[in-house]
Image 1 (cartoon, rainbow, N blue to C red):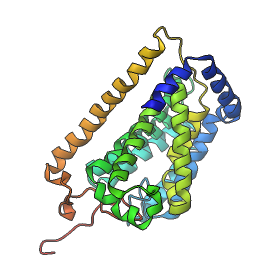
Image 2 (spheres, one colour):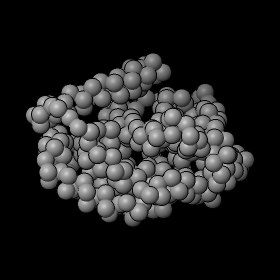
Image 3 (cartoon, one colour):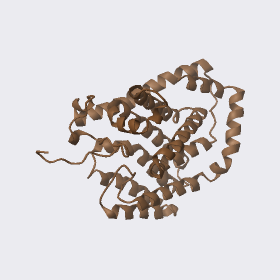
Image 4 (cartoon, rainbow, N blue to C red):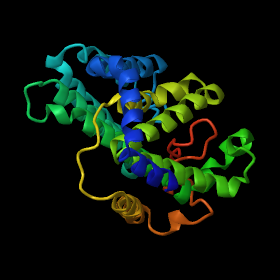
Length: 318
């Protein structure tokens, strides 16, 4: 919160103009080829999960169906041409829908915002003459921001899912006790996701922080972690490069500062309310207890390597 308040004030000061100008100059080569870059990232992502095999939209969503991998390769091929990019977008949404056969709807909501954001980007980027063409990167950014805020709430709803991960890799907590660290990590993830939706400088600084975190995570978790976060990381790089400046404003600095906690509180109410409201609708109140409910009622199975996997089906008498 203090970081946001300071950034809001700096953004309205000549120092902020200097910082933004330096970032613009450093990232101009990337922004000038932003569409090419994003299409390469999306195509490379689908080639990568095709190579991994046995997954839907992320290594966390596993499937025994071999044809799914070939559909992913087809999506990658369709991205090469603007004419076929809408088909690639439809394929991404189709993969999410197909995954409903094997995973709970609530579980797949973790991946919906990002999937819709990427699909919408491809659909809009295919039509440069459309009046919505200029909104393509904004929708992509919102998809990533909402996805991060939504997924961060798992650390509050099911902190025990992350116990094996923290116990296996204690260095992740930076010396902090396990129980306070997990919700603090959730707060940080939610706040930085919110930051991607705020003013231009805050968006860029939040994206820098997130890209550092995701990059550092590659070493302990391996290249599969890089594959799983590739779309998010690619989008974060474009958010950093986005030269959009703060629009002329009439409100004073203190008024802008006051808006930060109000907007953050609003995001918590909307995202948190939707998360726990749907959670209660699908699983009732029992699933939010500290002790995990029966495996078949979990949307994820605690796993040190894949903490977002669905619990396997059980049969009566097991």
